[in-house]
Length: 55
Image 1 (tube, rainbow, N blue to C red):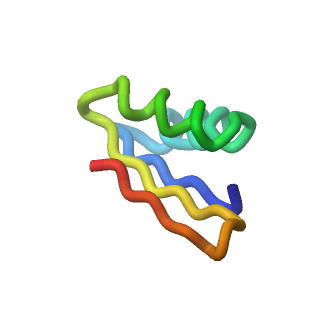
Image 2 (cartoon, one colour):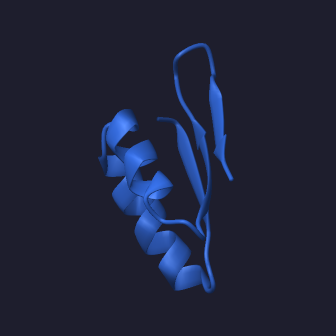
Image 3 (spheres, rainbow, N blue to C red):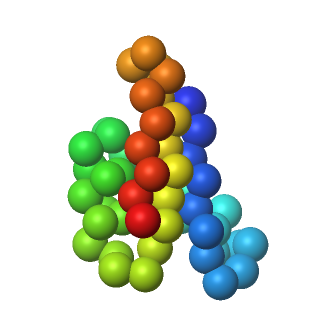
């Protein structure tokens, strides 16, 4: 991944989780966020600059 953006209730929460997600493999990061029903996430990867938006 090149970049991860997490929208959270406060900045410190978003910062903590985006750092953790950057350390995960792509599939694990997506699965982690999909398991949280209220989260929103944008991922950018190096694979032809693909972009995922998980609503």
